[in-house]
Amino acid sequence: MAETTTEQDPRLETFSREQLHDFLRQMLLFRRFEEKAEESYAIGKIGGFCHLHIGQEAVALGFIGPLRDDDYVISAYREHTQALAKGLEPGPVMAELYGRRSGVSGGKGGSMHLFDRDLRFMGGHGIVGAQTALATGMGWAIHYRGGDQVCVCFMGDAAVNQGAFHESLNMAAIWKLPVIFVVENNEYGMGTAFSRVSAVPVLEKGEGYGIPTHSVDGQDILETWRFTEELVAKVREGAGPQYVEARTYRFKGHSMSDPVSGTYRSKEEVKERTKEQDPITLLRNRLLEAELLTQDELEEMDERVRAQVDEAADFADDAPFPPEEDLYRDVYAETNEHGRLFLDGRDR
Ligand SMILES: Cc1ncc(C[n+]2csc(CCOP(=O)(O)OP(=O)(O)O)c2C)c(N)n1
Ligand SMILES: [Mg+2]
Image 1 (cartoon, rainbow, N blue to C red):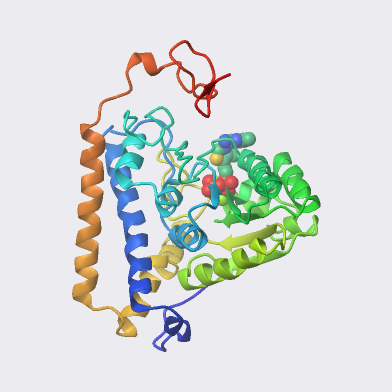
Image 2: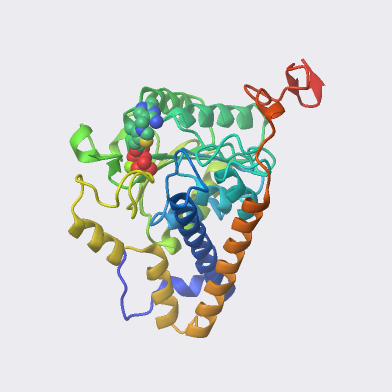
């Protein structure tokens, strides 16, 4: 994992100052957004499941930022920051967490089911590993239509022991589909250490299908960003599916009902990892040391981001809950007022 050093990182020169500031701004937005969600949950404004991505921000930004608008992203339930990275607005995302009608899924999906078809953010899925099969399906659709888009499919380390994962990788490999499977290896699935329940390491799971495998430092935005740029270019040119382990760490509990360290990881471990491997602190320190950012610029950036998040929370607070008549809408697909399927503007 990357560490802060006093030597200037040569990779900094390969990015513009604006780009580096934008990396920091976006990751700060993700962090403040989730801190606000945590606060709102504690006072009962958000209910149900809520899983924070705090600590893993450089994976979301690094793997989504370099994509085109017409590329697809699909994920599991720890997906707030990924949705923001794909261009969903903080207000409607927060409103979805609050269960409000102006939320991105009409207030009926909640934290685990953020979705935006136009922005090609295809969820938000609560069943561990289920999104891998949908990703292979999207890869097939891209291939069938002759497009050059890619589909980035995020999952946690626990998903690699699911049956669907293996079927999906196998099919993607046979058909050389443009899918990038990204395993966010934060070393735990709820309260279970990956090493206790897996016969082989995360990376080896992709090797059995003849898919090129890669391992990257998920705490280092410069690494995840550049890596993704290069990989996506290859996939667009027909390199077929790719399997990536992003080594990372979850700073908070599994969900809002799980304490930060619990009994499954020690306080010392959490303290050390959060101190040494915070993707935001790592970038901020590098930029300050290289004089690519001033303390004033940093404070101003953080203030702007906090204001943006407050605005998102106000937007959510002010929005109404879905009305009763919405109860049977969108259950399996869009339905019209008679409950009939309504797809692509036509009754079926
Ligand atoms: C098929 C299935 N089995 C069990 C669960 C319960 N469950 C929810 S999250 C989770 C752990 C997943 O861990 P991981 O994939 O590593 O993701 P992380 O939470 O670390 O991001 C489990 C077992 C589920 N949602 N779906
Ligand atoms: Mg995990």
